[in-house]
Image 1: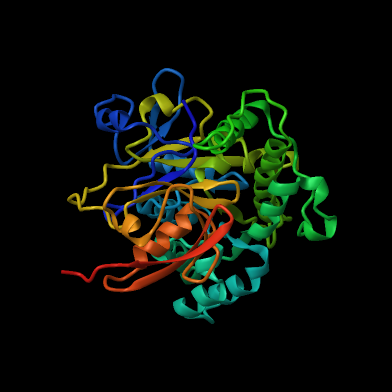
Image 2 (image 1 turned 90 degrees about the horizontal axis):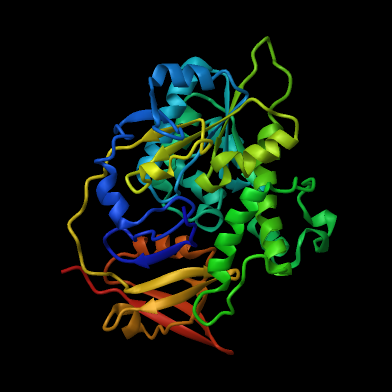
Length: 405
């Protein structure tokens, strides 16, 4: 299985994610439904020969006995979040004493999460006080059912993450070159296993070897790669410590089930957060993943997760012409224009290949997905100001979205 970086093409059809930690080719998507290992709407146990179907009640009853259950996602996939809500409800039936941790929030926002669970905030107040558009910037509608589930059932929510400024600083300078006082109280992450380093190197090499950049060779000694690994481990460690912070002794004879909501890449094959939890002394960990159509049967390797839920194919919207006509990629801490479609709105607005986005609607972009979220929310007939870095020059561009006809 080949790992590739995130690459998005902005269009009205839903912004196709070309690659990530678990993306297969279009040919695999076409044939996946016909492969015998998959039955839609059911749980599977990844296995070497043929994945085994597991009854939902048996699977949920079993994992509910663990201390931690980690639920993966691809952030922009609405069905993944619907699956998470369904799984949370099932687990809650077995273990009503529950805590839910979210990758989406840095620790400083914990008081806001507490007020939300207590019913003291409206949805608008909650999204405003959590700086949602800055800290995560995926459409909040994807996550609101999960937040509402916690509020309705008075389930405590944990802010698992640290501010992006910390992971960015470590990614640029390395762990040892960031003062201890600026590490948000985190302990040094445990070293990764070799297989996780290989995955991270594949991602890093794709980023570092894109158009106009020098290729990175396997095994090449590279301080930048080591800093990249340390930034990823910091992210994993922060979430593991956040989850572990709620794993104290049972109260009134009842110990809460601690559930983590996070991206697939943080838990696949027991790497990432599960690995960091184990080094903190916890072993009762279950990892569950949603399987969309694009994950072929060949990708259901032994050890991928404790179980995978196979989702049915999503209803397809009729194809529509591209809205902006630009492909973006994350590159060395910024968002870079990888290609511009001839005659597109992007070309008419002045974008050229190699431009790096400095500001979108007055704020620095977090990553390609945050830019996509802003583009998707832009109403017809409005203007969107952007600032790009082109060589040594900063330029102001304005995208004028046509009125709806």
